Structure formats: C-alpha cells, structure tokens
Image 1 (cartoon, helix red, strand yellow):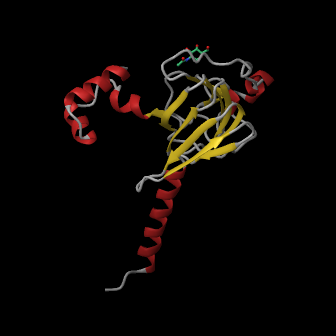
Image 2 (cartoon, rainbow, N blue to C red; image 1 turned 45 degrees about the vertical axis):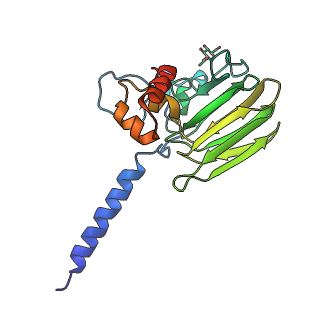
Length: 223
Ligand SMILES: *[C@@H]1O[C@H](CO)[C@@H](O)[C@H](O)[C@H]1NC(C)=O
C-alpha cells in the first residue's frame, strides 16, 4: 500500500498544529510593546494570562513596584520569607515572561524543597551563606553548592530545589523567574497538607511508612 503525499502532509500539519498549541501554554512572546494586566472585563472568556489595559490609559505606575527593600518576616517555622513580585503585584509584567523575588532567611532558615512549574529561577546571594541544591527528574541526581555573597545559581524549570541559611546571620537573596506567574509547589505542604487530604493508604504505600508517621506529618502541614 502506498501512502499519499497528501496524507503525509496532513499528518505533518496536525503535528505542527499540536506543537503550536502546546507552545501557547507558556508565557507568550509579546506581540506588542506591553500588555498591562487588568482584571476586567469580568466574567469574560478565559485567556492564557490577563487581559490588556487599553494602552491609552497605561501609566508609568503600571510598570512600578515599590518596597523590595523591606525584609519579609522570617518569624515562622521555616525561618524564611519569599516576597514575590509577579503579574498580580506588577501588572506591567503581563505577557513578558519574567518576575522577581526577594528571599529573606533567618539564621538556620530554610526555603523548603519546592518547584516552580512554569519558571527557571536565577538566584543571587546579597547577604550571608546559603546551601542550595536541586534534584533532577529520574534518576534523582542532586546538584548542590554553598553560596556566598555575590554568587549566582540557577534552578532549572520544574525541578525540586531549596536554599538553607548555614550562616550565623540573616541571609538575603534575590531571584529572577522566567514567568510572569511562576507558581510554587512546596513539596511537604502539597503532599501532606492538601485540602482535602490525600488518602492515608496512598501516602503509607508511597512513603513506605506506618499510618502514625503519615498522621504526624499531616498534623505538621495541615492546610
Ligand atoms: C512574610 O512577610 C510578610 C511581611 O512582613 C508577612 O506579611 C507574611 O506573613 C510573611 N509570611 C510568612 C510565611 O511568614
């Protein structure tokens, strides 16, 4: 049997269309100078991102966020605080595929293992000493370093990563992220603190431990 050229090109087009569709699920490349995010029109159709403000009404303030000089409060269990400037806090970021975070760490403070489903992260240490690392998808290889002031480390998109303040003083880092809305999945909270909770049977089998261990962990991370 011969396969016609027509059939082949149709199949090729289908593959091409699929590729284009998948690519559009990421932060789009801007087709204009900017697209300042606006919440209205209310109850309109879903768009991948936010609606654009009428350029006539765009002001310099739409591209401005003030206050990243202010430390986040690290008096919590983990001893860290992330102040994220994403499209929700800086509407001018809409469609631009970028955002910024300030991360404060108390002595021994931890930014616990987490992933950003939509962003690669590039981190620079401004104060202190951080033990950082990320783990690859299977097989799970750890890449880790101790960073000092001025050191830069990159966490590839989607991979589980962490930062731990191993110094005796507070530490400070800033991070650029390759999405206007990187998203964050904190591993322990997602697994043991979801709402509603994941079935105990699933978690005991997944982690190969007894019920009481899972219950204790769930208590720690209850949503
Ligand atoms: C982070 O710091 C801000 C500002 O001090 C505070 O409002 C917020 O509750 C802190 N978050 C955590 C998780 O401690």
